[in-house]
Amino acid sequence: MNTFNDIKELVFALNRESKLISEMFSKRKSIDYKFSDALELVDYDENRIDFLVQRSVIRVNGDTLELDDLFLEFFEQVLDVNEEINLSYIDENIRNIKENIDYFLNENNENRKYGYLRFIKKTFKKIGLITLRSVVDLRRNIDNTFKNESNYKNKQLKLENLDEKRTVIKNLITQTLKIINEDEVTFFNRALDEELNRIIIDLKHQLGECSHNLIEIEKQIIDYLNQIKIHGKFLEKLRKLKYLKDHFLIEAETDIKQIISNKNPVIFEPRVSEPLNLSLDFLREDEKAFEAIKRIAKNHNDRKVFRAELADSISDEFLENSIEEEIMINYEEIKNSFLATSDNLFNFILSYDFSKTVEFNERVTIFCHVISLYEQDLDIKNNFQTSNGIEYAIVTARQIYGN
Image 1 (tube, rainbow, N blue to C red):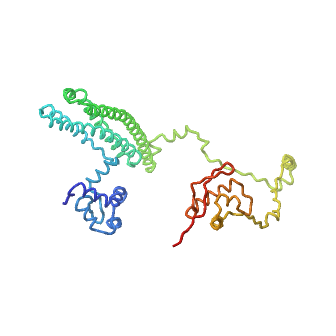
Image 2 (image 1 turned 90 degrees about the vertical axis):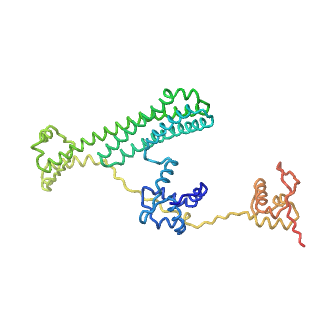
């Protein structure tokens, strides 16, 4: 297996194949990335894929490609999208701190003591960041397990395992605080400097925040497990009832008849309509029927009958074609007319005939538009004049000198 010669080669390779690596990372859980799809992202140059395979950036699995576990874990850790909670890493860091504290206390050489101290500072920083990330991952995994796991036994088992990880994180926080506050008092008295003091303060704040979150996570796990337990009991009873019903034992082995007899859910029964149609002979011959018909008709005499109103016909004048003319200002024509004169632009526009009424303020605006549109054809002087309270620059036509 080949390895990268230095950091420059590694960074260059990752940058050159950033499209392929980014696409494979984003699709790492959804699809198996095919070799043919990868070729399209490297301009159909198989040598570029072989280069990454030889240096263990990606692996070939049949006709599919996978990111190597080392690089996959690196990207997930840096981007904070990892779902696995690696608690052994925190435990290992605590052990390394204890070992290096012993080395520091036994060492007489100042340079080597400083090396141990620097390692301890760096490891304390790691513990804070890893613990925070583990708590965030733990909460996310708990939510995903409860909402997405369809098998109730596995859902309960996964939540119980996550609760055990919560306990482990809690114990690791306790161990870390015990090192700081109780076990290594001598070390902190000898080695405490401003940087280490700041790191310890930040670490205590991070661990305190993690402890509060772990309390909420514990409540959430208990609530989820209770919901699973209640739902599981309901499903168990439902399966048992279905079994008894399918085997025609439900009446013999349960008190279902007695329970149903004590209930009278009439409101849930469907309403049956029973129409009663009277015979025409009865309506024609019976006097009481005739009186009833007259009484009903009398009650409906004052009922108003609403008829739809028809809209008036559209006036012919609305159907006639009308043409509305508007005189537009032709800036090109103004410019060409001005270049043929020896006047300055402002005076020219004030006296220009626009074939419609143009107020003074609008003529000032036209003056500015002509300058902005045709500046290359105009000569803007440093001389200024005033008209109607407005100061303007003297602008003349640019002279073109030939050979």
